[in-house]
Image (spheres, rainbow, N blue to C red):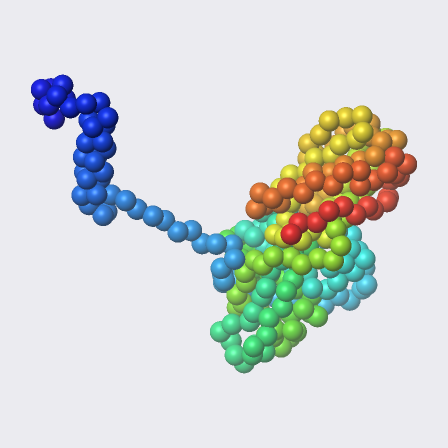
Length: 269
């Protein structure tokens, strides 16, 4: 636009004309100059392989890398899964829920079946074998290990190492998030269980009646810890899940709480 024309036009009209010219220029840009990308959602079906273990001792249902302890008492039962390193995410994935289905090998798959499981354990790599020669849980393999009770819901046990598909789903839980307090003196350890929604936790804060909000560190799995003197104070918790939602439960534990006790707070939608 020439300087003479700029002087002749009123300021408002000049602004409207410049806006029109700019929008016209953008509309004539080649389509390749504007790109969109789509990433794989965690809720899409993905491929993996699955094996099973048979619990020869009742104590095999206790423990696990997520720290849940007795899986039956914790409410998870035998509908659980151990994940290989590429899926385990150093324990953050603990508590997430998956639906699994058997695919490809129709000799062993039970048609039309699927099972919902919760991540409660880690399948450690075995570097005595190659990833494709017996090291089922070696990187980069996406591998899931199920109790035989769960495996037999989707495939015949003779199948062994089966191709499967899995995807994340929202967890459904009865009641609120549970906080089991352990530790000693000023070391506070809190196990977080029964988490609905996406199921996995990325950050936790704790608050006494005489403190502000204190960030807790992940000790292992879903065990979180802080060093603070919180005795003789009611305790509140702020829990954030991997989808960014936060639930705050005020005064969950009463002033007279003790180590070893479990308290129930609010729940994710």
